[in-house]
Length: 253
Image (cartoon, rainbow, N blue to C red; front, side, top):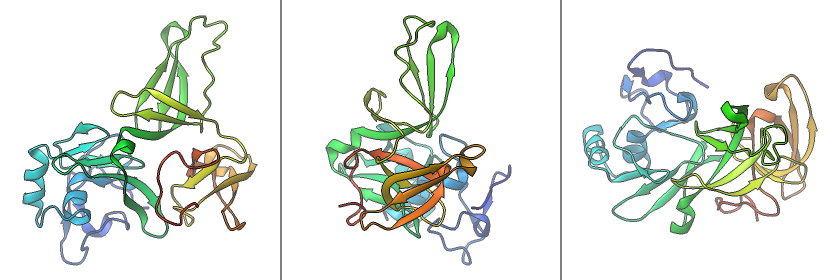
């Protein structure tokens, strides 16, 4: 995956390969602003409005629509055309009520998957890290840059702290209320977020621990009984018996 340096502009040829842009026709493209997702795993809002959804023919038209507040990301209007949209973000078109989720997709790396209106207020988030803050409370650091504070009554016996890294929370948007907690454990459903198996869905059937998430190997079994392996870093739990979000047809029956 391409890495983006500290320059204010981005050459089209240096952009991540999954970006839907004409690399040989234009020298420069919009660079995502630092935000909730890494630049190499996200897509600027302008490219979604113009190149993916087709609501504008030019960058100028897309910037105007965005500045007028026609688009929501995770329940909030975003007017920055460089805003980085990434894994499991919900994109809503204010005027039409359409909603899409940014999900991993085989080969192409991502897909804007249409979702029903009632699902637009929910989002799965992965616990990437957790820390103890002042007062003995627990702060959960999530994959999309969010932080959720779990208040603990007794720091010496933190019974409220039932969360572990790699677990998934299903939260409401935009107020971040926890609706469900899915533990990272065998036989749960997962989707692969990067690598050659990106977008594949299956059940966890094995885990070989290594030094950190990047060197730990997970074995996944898809709905046809085929098994494959991937890095733990690329695994995202999305359900128990069935996914908590809708997926493209055929991803999981």
